[in-house]
Image (cartoon, rainbow, N blue to C red):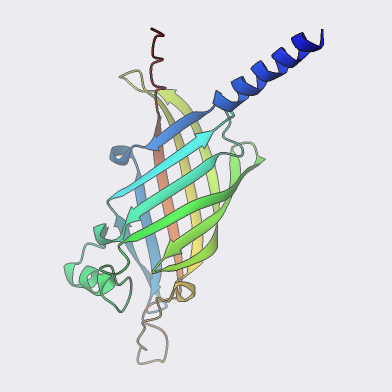
Length: 202
């Protein structure tokens, strides 16, 4: 009887170990945008066009999922070439030295309904700091090709000074040209990755 119970426990443990799904960001249907105050009175927006992200979940509702995200800093686009060059320079991102921005989750918890809180470590400009995002889970659906997709919206605010991005200039009134708080806004569609086919025993 003990052997039966032990065998059942091992079987359940193995099932739990492999009962996880991996999802990858579909860049065609996803955006990574940001906004920052300008001259105190308005905001400038931009986006990063090249990125990759994954979610590994052991539950259908993604609670406690592990999330990793990487962004190519050089893919920044604010619809102004001169501004983009300045942002990539040593005054801001110093992209030649720090070409990647990355995020690794430490916690992804359901708050209520489809609302989640995402905590993790954001690495930018060679500095790693804790970051927090409010996440809305849009649900899952099949696309026209039979792929399973999941949708998320995530928003967070970071202080760019915390990451050494401290360049600024003063306006005539004495205010900052560029604000210190940067809002990060992600709209993500992820594709469930198919498990590799089992190799038949010879």
